[in-house]
Image (cartoon, rainbow, N blue to C red):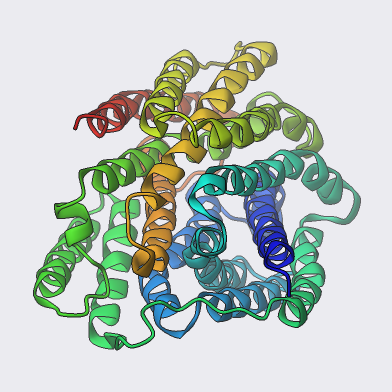
Length: 455
């Protein structure tokens, strides 16, 4: 096959999956009030519908990134599409909140296989001078998915119920993979001669799970112990990786590569301060403001739409100018937006919220594509899968910490109570406190983004 055609097919497939996954995630957030009523889930229970997906996505990213470098990135990517499609189909027929959370976790496993390989596939097939534009288009697909979710998701929920959201990846995923398998003949596995460290993978998965689950359950006493065990397990894992000849996770990429380390730190903080905004505002708009899923979606669409419009342009711009500096400007804009959202209250106008979401979306679009381009351009080709998995890990761990912070504050202010009129005021405190914490954390993200530009 002509290389240009294969490049386009790879990019199209990656963009398709990059559209579907965030579409489902954002649409499920919009459906949380409906799901809560059907399965009688409280506020913390609703947060687990989101967190189950995030935890399973995050803990498997690094092992799948390494496995993709050894066995083939295309293979792992395709298997991930199949797992996501089948788990989505099963999630559409559950009859309890527990089963929904279980299949959301399985969705996360499939998504982790795609997240760990998508950017690596693009980087493998595109030359350096075209990589930023391709990454920008892929990031745009993510934001288009996020943009479509509030509108299309709201329409699907109101017309056919929340279960219809899971039909989308189930119906569209398998045909897309079949077309790609018959079209893409190449495979990319620069580390094929290396062995896969299964023991380190098990330690990493268990430690990450303990850390993220424990953090999400703070400040409960048992959660402190679980979090500590997760941190201790990660310390053991890192020590093993430093001594290993074929590490599952190349710690030296962080120790000896300032650009790689600080760009990933900036990504981690960025996602930790922005992901739960949609979760909080979706509940706020539907419970406090009384909007329908479609009405809330029409307002929430402003942020991802701004991201989509800016991300492709900023990705191409990062091919010509210092991507770290462009990303730093974006991070600063996000910090301003978070500070403006902090005083949210019962009387806050939807116009004000929409205006601030526009500002945050512009900042995110300026940050994401250049930051990813900086990360992928800082490593050798044999580490592309690992770097891609690391980028995705920073994103998913950041999103998990974002939801963990929101869930912890929910637990502190509301306990196990549902969001009823009697608890509207505590929920407003939850929203304001969460956004204030995010605004404070974003200052560290600005530092990390600026610090990497020093020679």
